[in-house]
Image 1: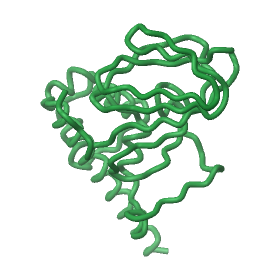
Image 2 (image 1 turned 180 degrees about the vertical axis):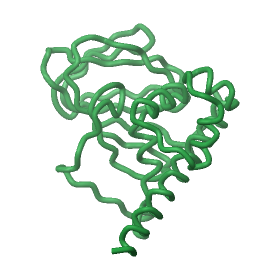
Image 3 (image 1 turned 90 degrees about the vertical axis):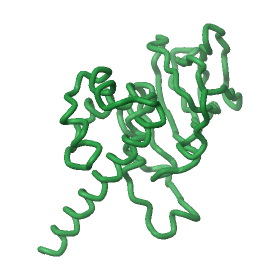
Length: 201
């Protein structure tokens, strides 16, 4: 029993370290100081310093504030904290019954389809929002493929309607948001460029 508890504590600590390292990596990629991140999130500088060193565990709401400030999503931060097993470097399989994370991506339920730090971040996003909501902007390129339903996509003020089988690719720096075109649920495959693909804007 002690071994199991110690193993769980070790895994939790390792996940906290990976999360902190990824937050630091993103912050540096965005050319932000800890003070600037603290201002953007309304979180204290000491707390963020502890978070980056793996010494603090954020709530989902705190993680969302950090994610928005760093132009990413909570689920992408969670995925970076997940430890891939030994085989994950080569092959990673996900099953359809895996749990969605509420408000994981663009305020919609989502699940990550790749864990750890990868050159691409594939996500399944499920939503039914009928209002546009806030627009998102990030430095990375992004690809969206409609698996089910229909969405309206606002790309820097240009609105497109996409149905099942349609897709859109846009470069980093383009303000974007989407919502249901019919009032019915939609399901998207979203692939975002990851850390290894970062380029200067």
